[in-house]
Length: 172
Image (cartoon, rainbow, N blue to C red):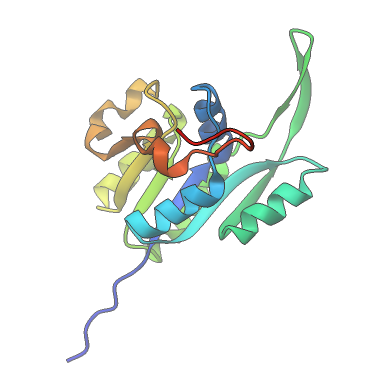
């Protein structure tokens, strides 16, 4: 009798929500360490990183791919807000679509974002017993996530494992 092969676990990461949320706490996320954490802690075999494409960031994109992320690009919009130039690359629809389409290939999924726009996806994954964790960038995530409290991991709880060390600053 053959054993049924277990499906792997995947991660779907809203890069802007994660990156800006962590920066708002005064530190930087080390994406290499974060990928290692996902692999060792949760057996994540594929980590999809949803990111707005900005011309000139090709070196960053290559590095992220070297860290074993699968990059899903979204075209960005440039606009002025209160005298500042801003770039917006809203990846929500792409993340939801990929997580649902890929769901037949994975056992469990991690969603990394605190954005309430992902409520429908979380609901979908819970109903199918496919939600492993919701990694939120800080403690101020959407109130829509309250019913998913048992899945939530605020990234500050793992700061020591995923923080980018600043060059020239001794470790504490």
